[in-house]
Amino acid sequence: MKLINKNKFFATVCFTTLMLAGVSCKDQLDVGNPNAPTVAANVNTETGLISFAQGGVYINGFYNGDGWLGNSYFSLPLGYSELMADNVGADASNNQVTTIGVPDYIILDDGTKVTNPAPQIGIIRSYNSRAATGAGNNAIYYQWLNMYALNNVCNQILDLSGTIKFSGDATSRANTMKAWAYWWKGFAYASIGSMYYAGLIDDKSVTTDGNYVLHDAIISKSNDYFNLAATTLSSVTSTTDYQAVISQLIPSFTQVGNGGVPTIDMWKRNINTMLARNILVNKLAPFVNGNPDAKITKSSTTAMTTADWNSVLTLAKSGIQKGDVVFTGRSTASNYFFSASGGTVAALTTGVNTATTFKISERFMQSFNTGDKRVTNNFNTATTYKNNYTFTTRYSLTANGNGAPGVYVYGTKDVGAYEVYIAGSYEENALMLAEANMRLGNIETGLGFVDAVRTYQGAGVAAVAGTGLTLSKALTELTKERRVSLFGRGLSYYDNRRWGWTYDISNGGGSYGNTVVTTAGVVNKNVTINYNFMDYWDVPADESVLNPTTTSVATKNPNF
Image (cartoon, rainbow, N blue to C red; front, top):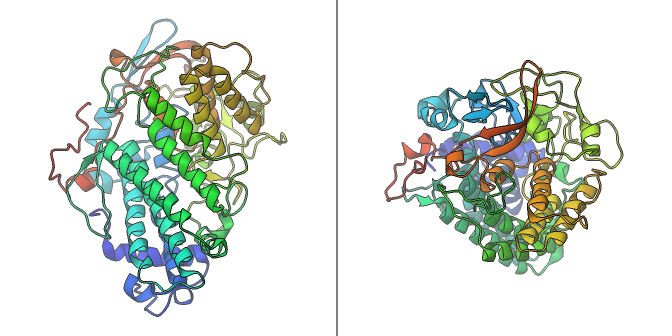
């Protein structure tokens, strides 16, 4: 990638081993100058490769030392997802967080139309320049940077795996290492293909070209690597050697809660969940204004078919189960890949709404059913934050919850307390089963999965299965539950996009029946919102300018 300075990259990787392994480069790697590390001189043993592979993933993929807003992939790129899904708002000037989630216009209950003078699409394009990136204002730069850095280090892991002498059952250990790289390459391509209109397939270390391909080709490549990870795991014959390697690749401080060391079968189920996600979030399943048959007339993708829903159903049936180990992250007091106080959307939202970076949205809160214990355990209305631009909110996120046993806690700033879901989760997989079943006519089965997730998070609300809901009412429960149970997991914007809510009303999109509170304290309950957001982002200028396209594929989304 031309975004990555090769010399700086090497230094960063050595820093990652120092941070995550808790030992010096000299201790962790073989001979070589620890003050000027290179792959050739320092990564030449099994121990060195494991440190390289751990640090390369968690630091190059997810850490940001520049403090762009918070300090990780989980605070800013995932923050944009929550902002554009209208789960949170913001008024900070950093990195366009105050503008990227503002819709084109809203229509209040009394018919008053409030128009945004600086629509999102224009803002994104006006700041998609190398100069804006340097000034910290190019919103679409960060996800691309992290994910291609992750992809590149995985290429190097694969190169090195063929040169390192492994101990024990060498084939099983090498295959575990390769599966690690294939899994994270699948993850990186999934992130790029789900967010950007076009991208690059870079499968050689520290090289690139101008052969841009459309986002669906990037998703296809992601699927290839997820499947290759599963096939490679099937070639592991020594469980002992597998466990010995994977337990070192996953940082010890993340091996708690739902994190840990997955068995081979658990990892395969994680892969199936991600394969199902790749289908679901990259096609349209319009559900606009309660209409399951809504159509979006102009989009950068296509609608789900019956075959697609069946594929999602098949994959999710073999996906993450309750109790499975999944890929998570935790903060530490030092040497972290995200901090407790600023490394996640949750941390930046936790606290009194007049003082936090992100503010819980009224639209998020309206997605809870009456009596949901997750509301009383996590949110309070002690203060009202007033701002017409990001919309007023009466809600604050209480740190560490209010102590209700068995009820999900949304936010904390305590070291090691918050669990980031890096990839899939039980809740996500169950809700994919729910939605696929509903769309295939199995409404009661689908509602049962919605109930299961609510039970899992301690919602304490009445079951919806067995109540005779129509498809429209069932999908309403599904959309509400995905919004509230998957908060902060990088899926919220993709959901609003595929349901059609982020598209222009003139193209069949929009969001209806929303709660909006004015600065005067008027509570509107039936507001129409026209977000009109760009569905797939342009390629960041830091790539497209330095590495111009050599194909007919546009690096600027032609649909907007």
